[in-house]
View 1 (cartoon, helix red, strand yellow):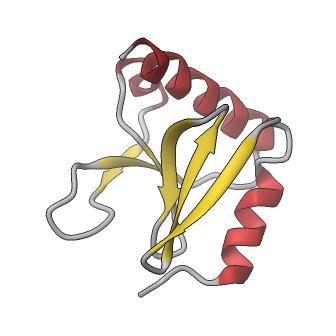
View 2: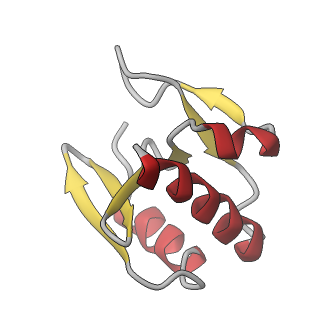
Length: 98
């Protein structure tokens, strides 16, 4: 099942506390970047982020975004924009070091 455009727009609205968010379409799903850092995506109407050391503390559920992919973390509380912002910033801090 591909992500709907309405859900993509909803997610982008929820990320409006972050400057420099970009979104790229990829085979019916969407890749998400913060300051040019790929941190996650929207898969099957779910916001997923890469698993890194700095975001383990949030105890998010692990999911597989698509067949043969590495597990990612699912952000379920889409109403808490401030928490989403903090999780993404923590994630990107680890990704910058790689």
